[in-house]
Amino acid sequence: MKKVFSYDALNRYGRGWHGTTTVGLIAGDYVVLAADKRATAGTLIASRTVKKIVKLTDYAAMTISGLVADAQALADAVREEARYYELDRGKRLSVYGMATLLANILSSSKYFPYLVQLIVGGYDTAPHLYAIDPYGGVTEEKVTSTGSGSPVALGVLERGYKEGISLDDAVNLAAEAIRSAILRDSATGDGIDVTIIGRSTYQEKFIPFQPR
Image 1 (cartoon, rainbow, N blue to C red):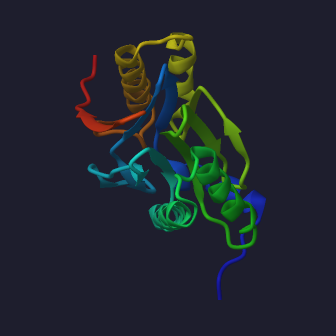
Image 2: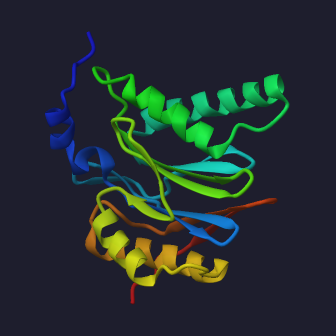
């Protein structure tokens, strides 16, 4: 029998199910996503090579904060829906459509919830970035962060982000936000993955952690 979770129980999970740091920001015609590489199980560092930015399509990706199995199931659902939508309609599913699908799945699973907090970013007719909470709330953002290190990361992002930020500066800012979280959050660590998405661009890179 599956365990029934309440919202209070979800809140008590705290760092146990969202120990990580992921960020997203809009930079001109691009979306920049970044995440650390560490996976934890309580006080144990379970892995130092986790990939927390999941490719959904050639023009969209999702960051993971929470249970990996839940996030993988959600990513698979979005990929299949996007593939079917394009075959059926002859056009791409919008990034908002992907975010809405994820939000609908999360909001309909109140008794057997998916323990995740997500960022979805991509480029359809323009760059878009959406934050999705564990209960299915979705908001469009220009800058956002999830996970146990997000309070630190958001402070760096808010200080450094400005309208018209260049792509290079945005990548550096995203990396600095994750780096700062690594220095202060024990569940965040072991390097930085960055994904850049634009009109005809889907690029991934890795930035080693270098304490200053």
